[in-house]
Image 1: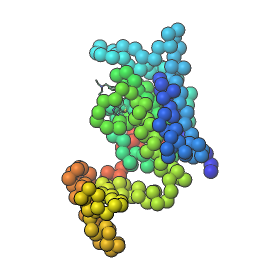
Image 2: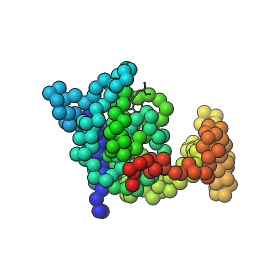
Image 3: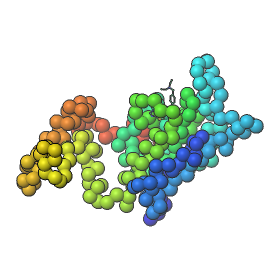
Image 4: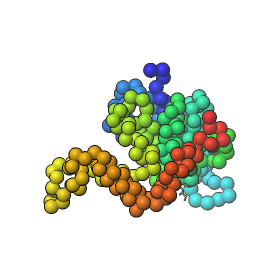
Length: 243
Ligand code: 9D3
C-alpha cells in the first residue's frame, strides 16, 4: 500500500475521537492501517492568555462565532492539498456521491463547528466546502464528522469484503432495499413471501426489484423522481478551491 487514507479533524473536543470510529468496521480498518485519524485541538492555536477561540457576532445577535485567525492557524498547521470541509447546518447535504468522491482521494481535513458558526472569511480564504448531514439541529460538528468518516472508510480498498461491496450498487442505483427475511419460514403466524422459498432465482430477482421500486415510490418520492438522473453528482466537488 502507498499511503493510507488520512483523516484530520479540527475540533474543540479532540477527546471525542475516535469514539465510535474506534469500533466495528472503521475501528478494525484503523487497526489494520487502512486509514489514519488525527484529532487536533483548535484551542492549541489560540494566542491570547485566555485561549479564546470565539467572539461576539458583528451586527449583533445570539451566540458566538469562531474566530477566523484561530481557525486559519489550525487549518494552516494541517493543510496539504486534501479537501478541507467545514461541517455546518448550512452546508450542502452529505450524499453517497460526496462520500464516494472523498473516499477516492488522499483523505480529508474536517473542521467541526461549535457555537453559532464560523467566520465567513475563513471559509472563503481557505476554500472550505460546507457540508451538513441533514435537516435537524445538533450541538456541534463532531458527530457529523464521524458520520462522514464512517461513510468514507467503508469504501476504502480492503475494508469490506467483495460480497458487501457489490451491495453498494443498490443504494447507488437510487433505490431503497427490498425487505429481508430469515428462518423460521413462519413466525408468530407471519409467513415469508412464498417466492423467496421457491428457489426460482429469476422470480426472486423480479420480486425484489418490484418491492424496491414500490418502497422507494412510497417512502422517498424525490429519490424515485430523480432515479437515473444526476443525483450521482457531488456538489462539494464543484466548490471553489476543491481539486
Ligand atoms: C439558530 C441557527 N442555528 C442553525 C440551525 C445555529 C446552529 C445550530 C447548531 C449552529 C450550529 C449548530 C451545531 N451543528 C453543527 O455544527 C452541524 C450540523 C447540524 O446541526 N445538523 C446537521 N448537520 C450538521 S453538520 C454540523
